[in-house]
Image (cartoon, rainbow, N blue to C red; front, side, top):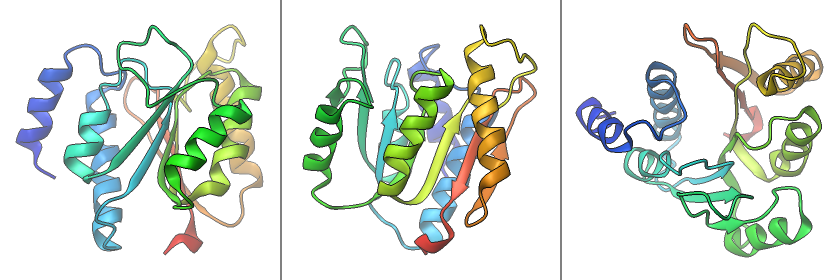
Length: 188
C-alpha cells in the first residue's frame, strides 16, 4: 500500500473521516493484502452508513474498488449511491440491481448502531458477501445502552460466541473503537 498516497488522502479527508488513522490504515493494509493474494483486482465494496463519504476515495484508490454507499440521510454530505434505510426492501432491491448477481467482496457495516439494526444489516448483507465483512465500533469501555457503540460491541460479542465457520479478527486502536472482521473461509 502506498503510504504517501494514504497520507495525502488523509489530509484531503481532513476531519470528515470517521475512523482513527492507525485503525483505518491497518484495516486497508489487511484488505489490500487479502485481495492481492487472491487476485481480486476490482472488488465490490458495499458500505452501510457513509457519514461524509470520506472513505470512498480510499476504497477506490487503494483497492481499485467499485464502492456502493448506502445511507438513510438525504442531507449526508457524501451523497450515497443508494439513499434509503439499509433494511428496507426497496433499498435491498436497488442494491441487487447494481450488483447484477455479483457478490460483495467487502461489506463495511457502520450504519445505525442499535443492536437490532446492526443484527439485521448483518443478516441481510452477510449472505451476499463472498470475502470480508467488517463491522465498525465493536469495542468500547462503556456498556451503557445509551452509548450506541455498546450495542455494536454486544452484537460482536454474541456473534463471536456462535460463529464457527469463518475466521474472525479484530483491529483495535488505543481509543478502542475497533473494526471486527469476519473472513468468509469458503470465499477463497
